Length: 198
Ligand SMILES: O=c1[nH]cnc2c1ncn2[C@@H]1O[C@H](COP(=O)(O)OP(=O)(O)O)[C@@H](O)[C@H]1O
Image (cartoon, rainbow, N blue to C red; front, side):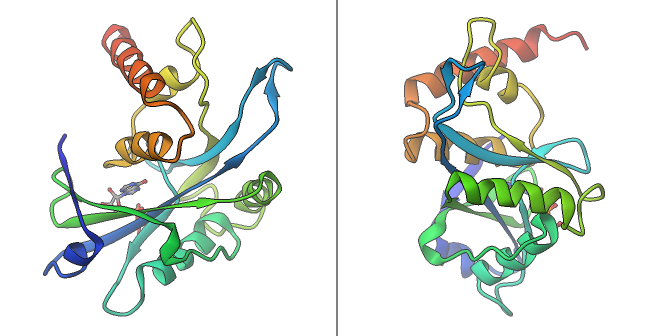
């Protein structure tokens, strides 16, 4: 599936397109898996109603609201708390060939580990969409183990639209996982998918 990256300005000047805005919430952590493997960062995605992984967010109407306001409104439904998103959080805009006439705008927001905990707690206890449109927040495992568990296994699952490539580019550009490690995880994920019983 091919996605074409375009500028925010170009995206907003397109006629007859729907605009989707999603955000990757992330932060640093000192936590260690099994008390020995440093997790380094927390990155949040969600399990959607359709069984696909994606980021919180949804459709916004740029003729009536800014991308950031529309995204914040969607987040209060999915996360059960107000979360401000500003133009500084803008990351990219992409045309999706799999969903004709949809522009996918992507944002990233760094938070403290305590704030991320609050988001996870509100998402399960206060979000109107919990259990309906959103089945739960998930932390992305960023480590890779010899058995291919961790990031390779996570990447072998099914993702909505271009959310997998949004994740991969954010991990690299924000320096959360090295380019080399991302590329190795993608190769392993592809081989897991090929060998999985149908
Ligand atoms: O995480 C994501 N990244 C990129 N596009 C996404 C993501 N999640 C959903 N989409 C796409 O965004 C559009 C709106 O879907 P979504 O289910 O988020 O919004 P809605 O709840 O307003 O209908 C659809 O075209 C969907 O394929």
